[in-house]
Length: 105
Image (cartoon, rainbow, N blue to C red):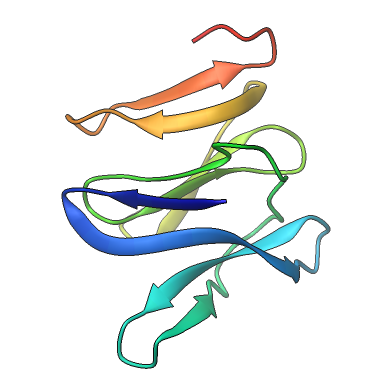
């Protein structure tokens, strides 16, 4: 899974690298080295869902963890948003939207 935002250059993925807590590591593309770099601050591994990662207008990632909660990195700190999620996306104004486990927004 890959995510970007038209208002920022950061591109993020759910990688195939395992995370120490289970699930998968997320990574940001580093233009200088042309390589994906794991985010070492990621607290919990990511689940694999289509649309399971999103990027806000400031270039910060949000992803769905292995417990179906959303983790969003803002100002360098991770915030956990409880509540079952299967898909996430950011609107043009930076609002975070989720498709929950009942397929409702």
